[in-house]
Length: 169
Image (tube, one colour):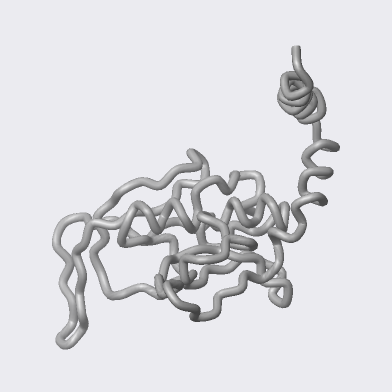
């Protein structure tokens, strides 16, 4: 066995031993080593960095993970989901509206007063007991953006999926 084979073997075996299942010390060590990933992302307009993609970052001032439009370039401090951000940067973050009951589902016909806007749309909500997004049909006036109702499965997953019931009280 050559030197490169030994290095590869150590590279594979050491993390397995240190990061064994249920080893909270190893997880804390990894978080400390990767703490830079909780820095605010650099999101300046440069050359080909012109995308506008929904992502999440840890806002140190607000002490919570928040959505922002990422330009598609540097990935430091950028997370696919709010839960991934919270897991790395703010363990125990409140699930906020992801823990709320969804708006009422359509049941029969509803009468609305004159001039009131009325929607009947297929949407998604986060079921915190089952820890997954589910479809339902919403009937009623527009809801505020920060409610447990999403127009796409992707947005529901990005915003809420992963938050456990134990954090929602």
